[in-house]
Image 1 (tube, helix red, strand yellow):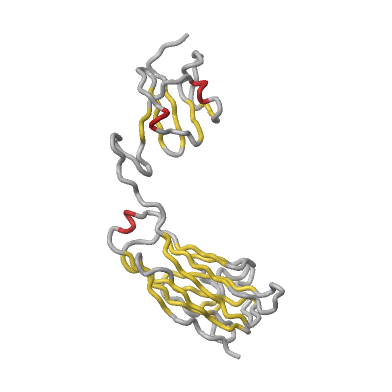
Image 2: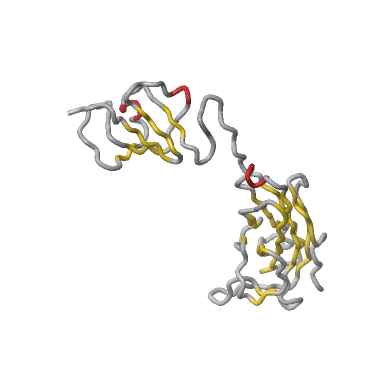
Length: 245
């Protein structure tokens, strides 16, 4: 019996479309590729080496990537094992553009090829405009299942607007804070010295790096001569205007 093609066979994912869903199968012919140490990707060649193909188009409006720099699309492949023994196995491969038959030499751009159910692959680095992909399901060890695929857009975190009273905020924008506290106030946080550290009192040092600093507007107060500069993902503390023996 021949496997049924994806239904529907294509779809367009946009910022307003919501998730796409399709089914494929039932699958009864195994395609245990790629072959380890020989192939870079699956071998897909008609009914002898079956692979299901879904034509995916991702269409994003102008400016969407700038507002959502981490935008991605996630494909989830799942199935119910007809044997109840959990021996069936399907893999998920995603190629840029239109890719139908393959001989194993072409590595997928995104993939999830394990023994897990579901298999989940994420298309990253999406851009504004139209992009096309081929989503392939490979029946590595089928037992006559119908598989289900869900494709959804992940907007990711947006770029925040500058906060009132700050010169800038958001990813990659340095922020200055000032602290009215001795260095011992940070004793509960890991401090790693960087560069030269001279002998100072307990309230000063030349440079320290702190992992995951709790920097909030309520924690810092202006104090002449003590400047604390935070840049993600580390914190550097400078007390440069005081002299100590």
